[in-house]
Length: 302
Image (cartoon, rainbow, N blue to C red):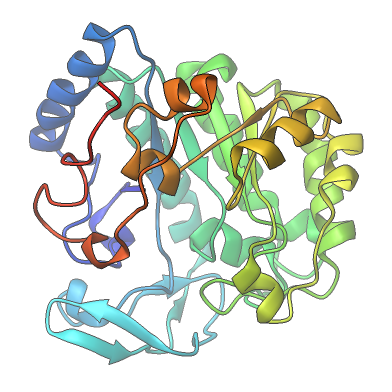
């Protein structure tokens, strides 16, 4: 999650891709990855309403509509209640599309092999897609066609800049994180996935329903529904272990499975999977801290 602008910030100490200094810093990362024969994409991110005025010199966060999230937000001064965001104007939406393009261009300059547009987890693009957070009545609201307009404008503009083979997309159709709801996600996200076929993206990355989503009353979208509709490369994630991942691929429900938490605690996860070796357990107390503990100090098999 790498913000495309200062207004995209919603958490302390998160990375950006909108300044020359950031581009230079990222070059060290991409060169290291390429030096080991790896590939690396950068995730373009804007949190929308999941922020606080303290990040923006007292200005309210922006969103498709002035719908306040429930709960509290992380700030440099501790947890604070969310504020009601300001609804974006049409001109501002057009400017945001340009910022996504600039972020993608900057990512390529920094040496990334491509970008993943972050359209999931209750952040800005997801806020446009869901009717629980988008109550607009203009060309960016009401119907699913209109609510997905912002997403497709971003995709088209970014593809024009860097090419479709360098662009992925992340969606969370069943997600409830960040107080997200939708009246009919099966129909709405099936429509989105069908429209995505036009763009020949590098991949579509779907976050499957998590235990927390189900616990919070998620209207679960079965993976099979999206697999039937989307004809491109499909990556799935969401608390998978090796056995579940193998079965998902064997049943042709996805082309690949992504792992996050398991990779944090197992830097050689692929090798451990190959050899059926014991996995290190992640220490959740070290998540989102500002030093190497819990990030680069887990032991490898060797």
